[in-house]
Image (cartoon, rainbow, N blue to C red):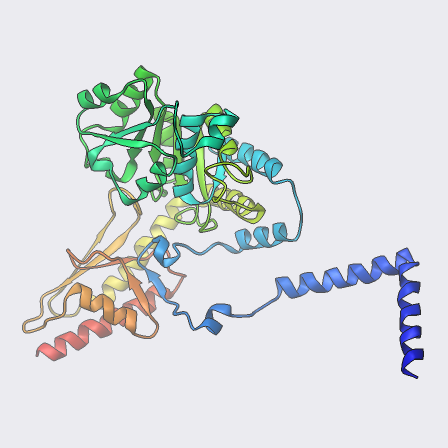
Length: 412
């Protein structure tokens, strides 16, 4: 009986294989079922793993997974995940679309802003020379120095050093000009440190143009304002790098490099999927490329004035909740560079209370729901509202009110 059933089953399968239409219908139904399962899955893997989630009143910190992608970006990435494309062609066409959106010569989606720094440096060193590209980070016989202001040294410049260069520090414009020589591959400017160094944007770019040396601006967290997507190119920077998963709310693993077409094309050659390149580990797949493009389109189309007003209202809601407490003072402020949107700062002076801003932040983190605030406690408790979901500011207000009320009662 069993053998007969097996023979009958095999015959049935063979009949399907000899019936193209029926086989296509079966495959189509299976594919549709798979897609339905993919797009309607509600599995909470983060919850399964027991990873703590929180309300983000801190801002776009990579360690805190920065921003949430809008539904349109998520949908575009899911759609891209179900299809095969030539990755080089997608990079080229998406880059052209992004360049048009940003009035740029050319653009490239990168694996975050740090990747953009590595690829920009590699482009300035090796260009499109295949032999040189294969050598990096061995820079023998190539220009291998990058000049920057000492005040612009930061932990992310490791991404520049990944290309095999030596960083040359200067402080004044005169020192910058003196440091440029036949080994200079690039001049680097850290945008959020603009006010820390002695050389401003325009002078820095002019020196680069004068000596024919490409200039790179790391503007990772400096959107908004939206105009920064255009401003640095208009100033004359040859290359500008942005994070994709911060204010632009694209994939956290994506970034943008925009600028001169020859350098962008060279950056692509130094990047994945080109196997023997310094950027091979900086893989950006079709989902991130598509997601980054859609996120940029959404960002440019949004009403930025309305968004600013909404962030201000959120600050005011939290302020109203806590300002009535004795000994509490609040102020709305906007960081001058990086995350330049409305924030709320809360200070207090309770007699006998030992509650510091850092201790208050720890109480907020350990409570339910967990809340992360800006990790800057020198001037009080600082609250970023722009990465909160609508209505979350009311929860944040109640939690802060509870923490401060408890400290007041304890010191009474």
